Length: 615
Image (cartoon, rainbow, N blue to C red; front, top):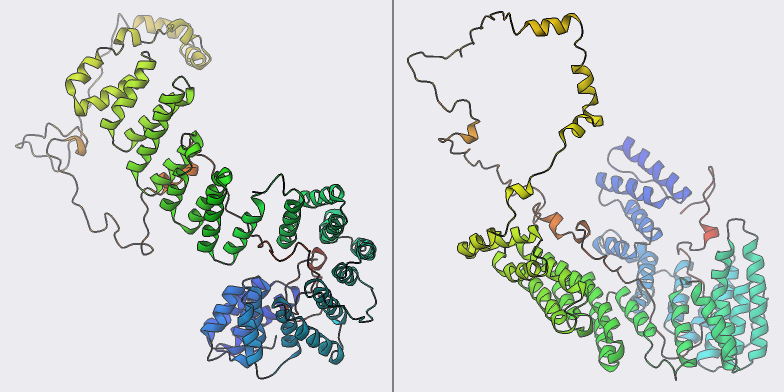
């Protein structure tokens, strides 16, 4: 990055030095902090804004980077920031927008040409993509030649697989496992399965050899990288009718929990294809597709997809509706999530469901709906499982919930049922009397007769045992030190008592003998009969203090994790890719464009001091 002149020369120079150092070390989070300080000095510093966009891209914050570009269009013209803008749009899956940004740039740099090839590949314009990569390979001489050849072979493989075009011989030497893999994909497209399998086996060997040379790469990392090769091997086995071998290999890949959601989606589709007679309503593909839609911020479309699946497959409706509720909670629509959960009839009476619904309704301060959930669950157990311990447990929780929210009248029936089941439960009886005292005082008096008398409730304490306990030992020893003369003096005190002079108490400075002293002067001020309390000042409630819309009261009550009886919340849904309906073929490998953050572990090694490199 080049230094820029800004207000406060000394401070700006130091900040630019920090930015440059952090950039060379790959610490873009810290570099971003320094860039923000530079922009505080000069908010329209073009170089600083460019650096900020680069830092955000390197940190994976593509949406925020695009926002910075769109906010400063007057300063960051399309010629200055065209690549960064197009790359953010590409990574945010706005492929058409990325294409327009590239085409509108006045100067087509090598970086834009690289990205242009990636965009054309994503748009499945393979002929144009092939021409773009040929031009790049012909006119470029740098260290990225191998990556361009890999991308070129991926385009040829895609043409062979999807467009059934006979691939031309590019004369590329299979020096990397990516090239071998892409050539295997091309052979699959031609139906040459045995040759393709040999290419995949060679790709596996090259992959192990390449990654094992890096001491920081573990065996798990190698297996994760091999997952896509093994997936393609299993696909060939499936095409050859070796379904058992294919299933075994597919399951091995799934156990590795690959991070490539596209691979996972294709494998799931292929497994369903093999077991189509046993599992026509498999949930995994639709869940993956919904997760991909959520990743693209299309939550309404994802919920609609799940709703349609639930209507078409009632047997799996419960699991689908749970996912729909989770998505609604993620959007902040708690009430709608409750409506979805209550539509799952087979789970309405389950303690976990009751607990979740009550917690969510309490968060929304809808106490009536929470009580209704308790009532429906209790009625179900009264009808089908009246002797179940869950029945009484729900009644107890319902009573406590109603009492907590001041619904004593509604809690009476629950408390009576609990006391009926256990007449010796003094605590429940006390709660019942307290509830009746507001509704029917006479009934409360009658019930109070059932309370145990004070005699039966008195504690039987063994005084001798208490004195001989460990806690009283020191006191007794201290009291037992009276020996000899001390004992005689103590005995003589009963015969001869010395008169002690009484000291006159000090009178207050404002004491007036003519005025009668306040008879309540010994009581605390709050307990005196004439105390009226302090006047409420303007600062009492601190209205208007803090963040707009903030509140301090009741936050702990809304936190379900702070209550002992609250159920654990479900985790939020993870990101996944949509299932391709066009084919079950695992696509060829395609390299990321220049400027993409490194993803492999071997590229995440710690930077050594004094290392060369720029942005």
